[in-house]
Length: 336
Image (cartoon, rainbow, N blue to C red):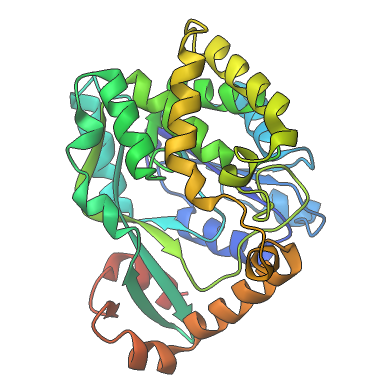
C-alpha cells in the first residue's frame, strides 16, 4: 500500500503485550505510521521487533509517558498525529474522513468523531454508547472566540481533545505543556490538552462513530503521574496543603500559554467552579472510594459485569449494539 505519511499514531503501553499484538495486526501495512511506546517490562523480543511491518516502529522506554512521547518527536514527519490507548481503535474509514476535513479546513487544528464503547469476547463484539454528552455539544468547540471555547470546555469537560486527530505541531505543543505542568494529579493531562486546544482553534466533531473505546479491559495502573485515581483534581484543588502546588501550577500554565498573570484568577475560578464536585468529604465512604486498593476492587467488579455478555444483554438491552454495526472493524479480527 502506498504510504501517504499523513498520520502518525502514537500508542503508549505498559505491560499489556497482548493488546499491542492486536494493534499491530489492525494497523499492519496501512498508510499510517504507528509508534508503539512500551514502558513496561513484558517487551517484544529482538526477533519479534525485526518482524514488525515497515509502518510500525517499536520503542522500549520506561520513563514517564509524556517524556516518552516528547522524545519521538524527531521521528515524526506526518502532517497529523493521533494519541491512542493500547486497547482502543479508530475505524479507518472515519479516520480518512477526518483527515480530509482537516486538509480542506486549514483553520481547524484538530478534529474527532463520536466515541463508542466496545467489548470483545469469544469472537463476538458488543457496543455501547459512551460519553453521551458529546452528542449534545457539537457546536460548542466550534465557537469563534477562544475564551468562549475555553468556558465551554470547563463547563462540559469533554475528553475528546487529547484523543483527537491534531496537526502535529499543535499536538507537540500540548505535549510540551503537559511536560511543563507535571503535577501528580489524576487525568490532569487531559485537562491541559483541553485548555491548549480550546485556546488554539475551533474543533470539529464529525457526526459519525470512529473512536472505539474498550470498556471490557481494566485500565492501565502504574506509579507514574496522572494515573492514580485517588488523586483527583477536585481534591487537589480543595486541600490547604496543596495551595502552593496549585499556585505554582497556575503560574506555570499561564507562562507556557503566554498569558498575563491576571489570567491566574480566571483559571483558579474555573477549576474551583468545575472540579469541586469531587472534593473530599470526611466520611467513611469517601475515604473508602479514594483508597487505591478499594478503587481497583470496584473497577475489577465493574469490568467483570461489563465483560459478561449474558449479563449485559439482560441489563443493557436497550443501550447496546450487537454485531450489526462496525463491520469494517470486526471483519479484520474475524479473519485472523
